[in-house]
Length: 321
Image (cartoon, rainbow, N blue to C red):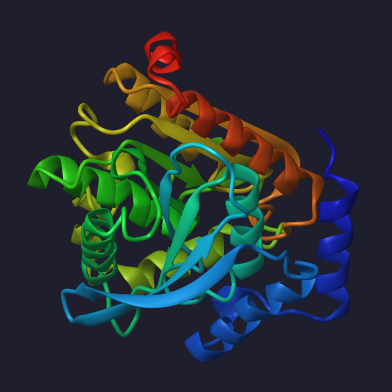
């Protein structure tokens, strides 16, 4: 379908600001530009509380921001979230307003994790940070007011990559037990020589470009050979059995669109329940544009999916299974 008017207005705003392509600037500038996306997010929505904590990572303590939703009855999931930014940019501030809304909409306790970024820390550092954070937060679920049996690993863009990798690592390493995974516009395979039509169709002109993704992958991976590692590129993993059920959200005008659909198909073929939702007319960053109609619908879809995965009563749980 045509580009949504909200997405078109956002691109017009960026054009007026003469925002340079991410691949054309150095890393500090890319980080500054990425932070500027917060200007399009609207006012912060109140939640019950926001607290800061830390969890141990492989190279030191990792900061975590925990959002407690406006309270509602029943056990609450713990949703551990990893921000996007091409592994080189982004932070918990970038996703603060979207996660406030997601916590309240879904009723989940949301833990937003800071991980080490490339190029200072390349693969596997960020993936190992993500796994360590999920393992530590899983042990603290009750302390955070959540049900340990309702652990969800989630992420957007590069954070979706880390979420998918964490699920593979948890399967391979015998825990923690992850009940579900939520991947929002995830980057799951290298941009170079990508076979997917969306990489050709939306190579430029819609903020997230093929050139930008190639640049991000080059900064994230120490060598091209690392692209064969399943924890770097979950789509290329030789085996997808035994992974948690997935909800995968994609944007129509995004080079990454088709690999999201392909990952969902890989999971289903491997016997893993997987639902893929595509938001027509939307951009790669739609979830960050949290006042947009696509983001609003996504929060509804996430909430519905979580309620189906984690019904309130045992009787409902039997029907859902």
